[in-house]
Image (tube, rainbow, N blue to C red; front, side):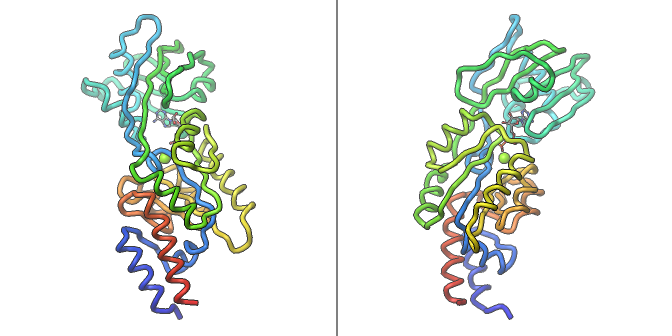
Length: 288
Ligand code: ADP
Ligand code: MG
């Protein structure tokens, strides 16, 4: 039978805005010693601002933004939302003929009669596009139109207000290792993990690479120690399932992530992870 204090623990967690999907996850949470984070939307707000637009061949920046916004019109990726936000015109559905979104790459679309690609260097390389690198720090969205490099949009995200505190608290609570996994550029990943005091980061990962990284970290875990993965996106569902404890952002997170998770942070605050671990440990001590 399940001791009553388990439910006390789950109730206490829910007061923190932490939903634990079962008493076994409270026990698992108490033994977490590695915490792996997704970056965008988990440690950062996931609301990007357009910092700069660079174009080639004297292309009008608004023209570039218009094509990018139309290509992104069906996507609800945080990057797509920011491009649509930055575009001052209206989206004309009639101009959009064919759209394909590729996880960890970007989107390909036919807008008017033009083939438009919007995404990272992986997308450009996969399509044999020459692109120009950018000295600015940020996430770079390359745009090509009809097989010609048209320019890039530089976007920047900000870390969540409590993200640094979240990492400090985890280390103070005896968590052995914090890791960040991201599909973004190494340069952005390095800056964020340095700013937050994260032990290890891996960048330019595809969803399958994130699963592989988590499997590697799981194989390095000591007996009885647990790995928690914290994520927010559709692509995070496989890793959330694979981790000993999957933690999802509940407010802005995707339904797929919330569904796949064992623990849900109702207010999307990463600092509540250490609070939940502390509460779980206190509860387990009562149980034992
Ligand atoms: P993260 O790991 O930071 O949560 P994702 O795995 O969702 O990021 O995306 C990784 C990268 O793939 C992004 O940094 C971006 O370069 C590219 N990307 C993904 N979706 C889109 C999109 N809709 N438009 C443009 N680029 C995208
Ligand atoms: Mg994400």
